[in-house]
Length: 565
Image (cartoon, rainbow, N blue to C red):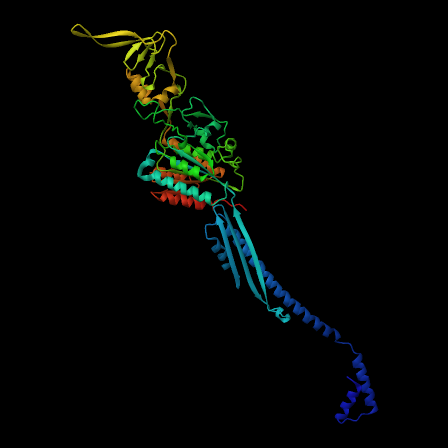
């Protein structure tokens, strides 16, 4: 306050301005001017206002960051759940549901999903507007929180074994036709949804046994009694493991026919089928080759799902790597697959086996050990110009003679031996009367003998066990039944079930996903198939055209089996 203003105020109030008053006024003004009390209050008020404004803005920023952080965390969790190949729900619905339950509001969410047989990629963007409480004082009415992320789970490689029942009953009610159509659709679905070389498929047909095939069997340590067919037999302990190493000793199944009784030679219905078109096709990436193998299948014989499963699992087990590498080198398996089957620890590889049957396991047979190899008691005269005119001799140690089945006589030498003879009998006319006459006729040369002793494998390749009994041993009932049953039971149906469940368990323990299909199978067969599968959800009970639905469902499910970050 100025001194002159103070005096003017006094005059307006009608107060006399005296010298004393003037002096007092000057002193009061000077004292007021010099008084600094309360100056910090003003400064404090200014600072407080600034602090309140800063704190308000911090609150707005904290609200913004809290919203952004919650959105990002929700987005990350939702995408990981949606991209999981184990996720059975729609991927976009999963992300939307996560946000709906997060408590977030006023957000905009966009989700894109890309998925195939062995991968799923989920990308999402989310934004939210946060209204300002304090920042609008400086012209910021709102802030937009924005988050985006991508999650992907991918399986690079898939190894599959399809184990198909081709037993005789598959010829009934169009089962074989329906199975072929379903299997080919499955192959197409898998191969078309993946890059070349990512999916390899083995076809393992089985009936009473498994025809390994002339090329694949070369890679294994199989006994050499014969080379007419390519089936092997296993011991019970072999089914406790998924592995089948190429150096493991395997006994070749005899080449024989136990079911027919005709004179067809060589045998026309061998217990082990001989055509490679009915054998295993190992690790193929060719849709054409796989379709051709499926198309070539024919129905015949009994059921041995345990052997089919054993080979199917073996072709997924890393112990078969040397086999595959060798066949890649020879050109029998596509280049680039020499590192398969991959180790079970390979995170980018999925291993799947599909086992189907329309029946239940039956007994399995082989020729008795004493008659699987070595020389038989039967000789053949090799001098005949055709097999249909060949004559045979049967040596009997008790008589120490040879029986000629073509004329039912006994002789000292087999037909074709040097200087051998045979008794020839017939009616002869002497004058006006007929007489039955028998004479010894030389049937061998004085030079090289043409009588050849047959080995047992050669004998069984020529004639069925029933025909050997009825033709060569009809002269003795004991010998007849002995040779009629020259085969033995390896395992019965119950034991075959046990072996199947053992190898199924070994496969599951190793990390192989096991799907099974009971295709119009009896109840016992269905029970065994369900027990073999990885779970009840991996078992399909189907009839008729439903087998196509089963294979389609399995193809769709494969992408939901294993997580790979």
